[in-house]
Image 1 (cartoon, rainbow, N blue to C red):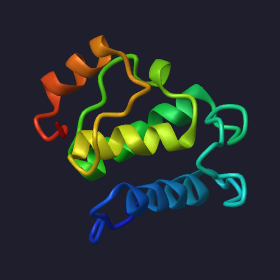
Image 2 (spheres, rainbow, N blue to C red):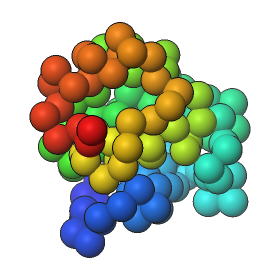
Image 3 (cartoon, rainbow, N blue to C red):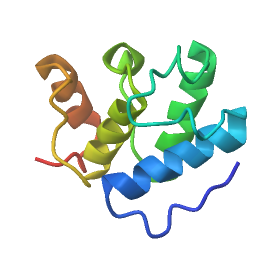
Image 4 (cartoon, rainbow, N blue to C red):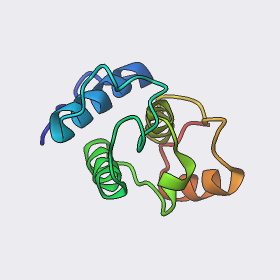
Length: 113
């Protein structure tokens, strides 16, 4: 799948891009893909599919997710906020641990302050 990342400059644009990715790649109804949707339960994605989503996002936005990323994420909005922070579009998400923040910053120089 090749969704263009042109024009994505903030977390809302990025959220919309992730929704389209999950909708198009995994056939998840867009009505389910809300900010509060729980990635595994509501979206119906397996761990393997979520790992594929992370890989696709990482490649598309030139970021790196550290090991254990899925342990930090529960909701679709959290995936978007984490991605936005790593890309430098948004502030550090409150839900991540200090240890996870340090691992993210070590491998993503674009992470916002």
